[in-house]
Length: 292
Image (cartoon, rainbow, N blue to C red; front, side):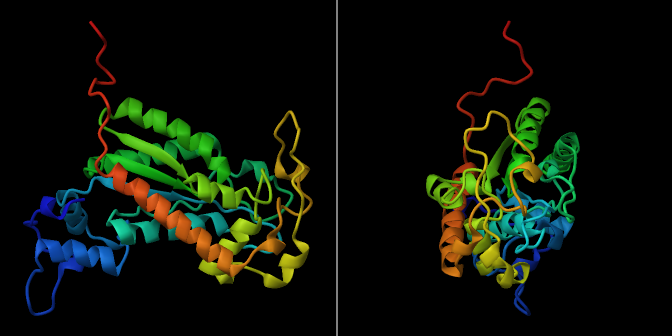
C-alpha cells in the first residue's frame, strides 16, 4: 500500500496511532508504527480500528487455517496451527495486513483414530465455516482473503470454498496458500525427506525455532519413519502408511534449519501479499451476467 493513499479517519485513532499527551500521529506515522511494532490481529482490534484500517486502503485479510492432529511422538498436536498463525503474524508485521483469528480445527480425517489427540472436521463443515467467515469479512469491507493453510488435508475443502465464495460475491478475490508450497524453495525444504511428509525434518525444525514447548527432544532420535507411499495406486490413511504417525526423518531437524525455512516462508508470502494488495482481475465481466 502506498503511503500517499492513506487517509485520515474521522473516528478516534486506532491504538497504534495514539501518542500520549500529544494527540494524533500523522497518517504516515500511523502506518509506519503499525508496520514496525506489532502484527494486526483482528481479535485485538476494536470496530472503530477495523473501520479505520479499511478506510486507509487495506481490503485484504489473512486467515490462518491450522489443525489439531497427531504429529508423531515428538511434536504437539497444535503444530499446524502454530505454524500458520506465526507465519501470518510475521507477514502482517511486514505488510500491515490484518490477521483473522486462527482456525485450530480442520479436515484431519486421514489421520484416523489410531493415535489419540486428533480433532477433525468433516470437509463440508470446513467449507461452510470459511464461507461464512468470508461473508462477515466482506460485510466489513474486505474483499480480498488469503487462506494460509498449515495442513495438507485442508487444501481440497478450502479450494472448494474458494469456488463458492467467488460464485456468491462478484468482487471477491480469494486464494489458498498452502504453507509448504508458498514458493519452490519452501517446497524443496518440506519435501526433502519424504513426498508424503508429516512431522518430518522440516516441521520439526520449524517448531524447534518457533515453539520449542511443542517439541519433545528426547523422542526425536527414535521418531523417524519411512515414506511408504511410493508407487501406490490409492491414497491411504496414515494408520496404513506410518507406524508412529510420522512420515520422514525428524532426526535430521535442527533449529538453524527451522530459522532459515521460516525466513524463506516470511519473505515469499510477504511478496505474494504485497502483490495481492493491488492486483485486479484481467477482465471485468460479471460472474452473474450472461452474454446476450
